[in-house]
Amino acid sequence: MTLIEAQEGKEYIIKSIEIEDDEELVSFLFSLGCYSGEAITVVAHKKNSLMVSIKDARYNIDSQLAESIII
Image: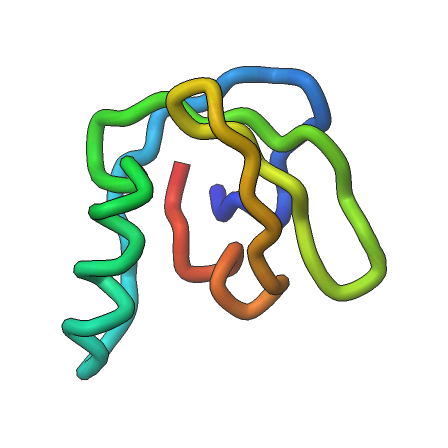
């Protein structure tokens, strides 16, 4: 299941991040704490993005990126 399908307020564990040919983006996500084995919670679904909580911090990510995060 991808992050875009997650229920609001429920904690999930990231299984993998499937981003091809963009090591810079993968490194950026890692610096936010978004990597395999880490807990993530969808705070809110918005029109073209999601508000997520990772390690007590909140981030807004776009739908395309959320589809590449497997939970």
